[in-house]
Image (cartoon, rainbow, N blue to C red; front, side, top):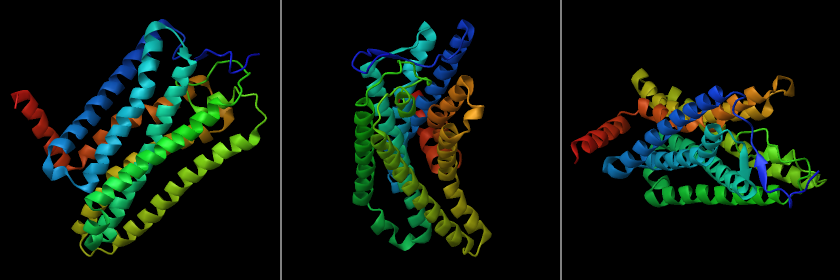
Length: 310
C-alpha cells in the first residue's frame, strides 16, 4: 500500500510483450505522428499564408489543427520513448502535466467542433446574417472562449484528480495518463468529488452534443428545402467533413469508455486508445482537404512554392 505523497512515478500500459512488437508499435506511432504533424502543419501554414482563406470556416479549421497538433504531441512522444527504450515509467509531475495538456487540447477540440457546427448552421440557415453573426470580432471571441473554457476545464479536473489520495499502487492501464485510470488507484471515500467530476464532464459533452444535433436537424431541413439537386448536394457536401471528423472523435471515445467490461482486455483497450487519441489528429487534415478545393489549391501552392524556394 502507498499514498500519493510517496508516489514518484507511474507505470503506463506496456505496448507489447516482445521486443519486435514494441519496435513495430514505435514505428506505427512514428508514422501516424509524422502524418499528423505534416497534415496539420500544412493546413496551418496554408490558412495563415493564403489571404483568400481568411474566412470563419478556415479560421476555426486552423484552431482545430492546433488542437490536433497539441493533443498528439502530448501523448505520443512519451509512448514512443517507452516503446523504443522498453520502459513504462512516467514521473508523477510528468503524468500530471500530460493529463492537464491532453484534457486541455481534447476539450478545446470538442468546443471548436461545436463552434464549427454553428458556423455551418449560420452559413446554410441564415446566409443573409452570416457577415453579422460571424464577423472577425465574433470569431475571435468564440475561439478565445473555446480555449479559455478548455483551460478552466483542464485545470479543474487535474487539480481534483491529483488531490485525491492514491493507495492502490501506481500501475495505469493506459499508454498515457488519463482520469479514469488514476481514479482506479484512489482510496478516497470522496464519492461526491468523483461524482462532481463526472457531472461536469457529462454536462459539457451533453451540452455540445445536444447543440450539434439540434443544429444539424435545422441544417438538413434547410438543405431539403433547396429546390435544385445541385444546390442540395453543394450545401450537404460542405457539412460532410465536419460530420466525418465529429463522428470519428465521438464514436471512438464513446466506445472506449462505455464498452461492456466483459469485452475489455489490455490489447483491445490499447487499440481503442490509439484510435481515440492518436488516429483522429492524423485523419482530420485528410478529411477536410479531400472535399475542399480551395484548401487543396492553397496547400499545393504552398508546397510548390517551398520546392521552388519562393
